[in-house]
Image 1 (cartoon, rainbow, N blue to C red):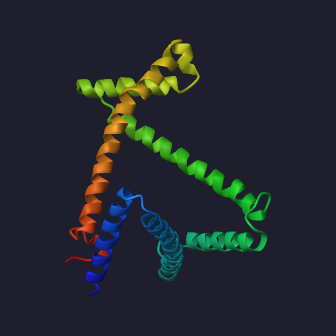
Image 2: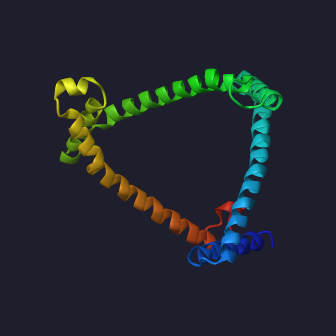
Image 3: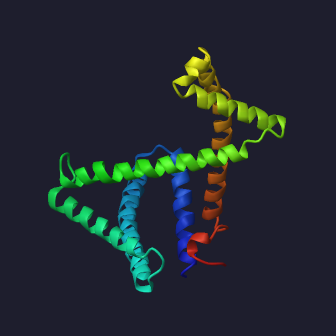
Length: 207
């Protein structure tokens, strides 16, 4: 029953959601809105579970004194301070919570994304080796796009920004649509496997 229940629920809800999409009846619209409301409720409970998991993870790190465990205290301190300021003073403009968000979290996020961009550029530099014609074309397109996205690109050639826009509008968009089409087909395939009971990974084990 522990496995048949979730499988049956996934089958019924999955089929019902597919059917209601093609039947614009008031009942199906109400059903769709009810499912959306239930998803919001489930998301709230999942957020509580995520808080519990985060606390459990960092408490274990502190107890076992895993390397860099003092950072767990910083995590708890930030968590408690942000929650206390948000509950006590609200989250509107010019509140302590908003000041912390704008002056601490946003700069930290910018720093992390800057490091990520550096590592991506470093990996791309090592990967872009013109060993074949396709790799040479990819390397050339990447260099043109990078030059066209900075002010110095217009100094190299007046038409550089227009060339970059053409590359982004046609070859890049064609590749993106192919990738998105593949992702969409993969999502449909996974959804059908879940509805039909073939994919059971969400049950937490094997058959």
